[in-house]
Image 1 (cartoon, rainbow, N blue to C red):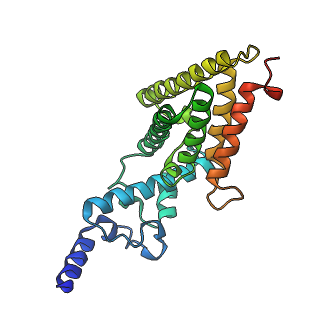
Image 2: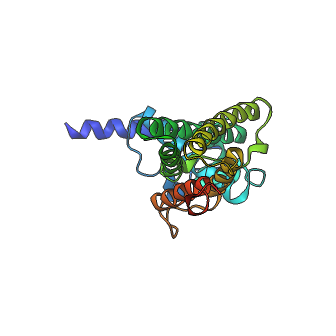
Image 3: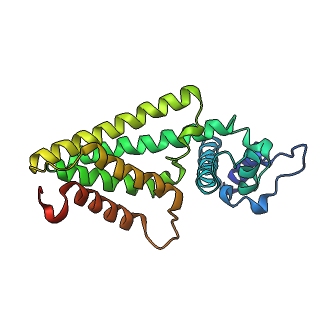
Length: 238
């Protein structure tokens, strides 16, 4: 019984475009660590490999910048041919758009989590900030991109701008309510959100899973700092 299953797996492996020979020669499997050990069904393989591509591309965009990163660069990182990438994406712009869309999807998840668990506006702000950073520094969030907004073109930029503005407006309204409930008058909610989002945007540039700080620790620290910024020195309204 186990032997036919192995044969079927081998047949599927042969049909994968990542294992076919291209005009430039065979795929160098020894360097394709990001796509190694994938033994799922074809649909699962496709989704997993595409996610791996997005992750590596997002990292390259964050490290080197969008303009300085080509599809060929991404293919080299993946250890596959550039031709193989076209089975998963049509362009570099498509990758950037999806990375941005993911970051805003994570923002929506953070909003829902904070709304469901927050006890008062200030606690909701804290939970939203912490959850958002936890998601961004998690495995799925490794595909997210918040910088390189200006590299988006036409309708793509307009779409991401709407998502970004909606998220920031939601956080700003929470901060505004928190300021009112705590009788804090000398804080501008718009500037407070700019302060937080500026820190979060750069997080995707410098954060590394194997770095000095865990994602959970960064999330805790940043969310505490955000609330401290809202409350002001010594939690006073002065």
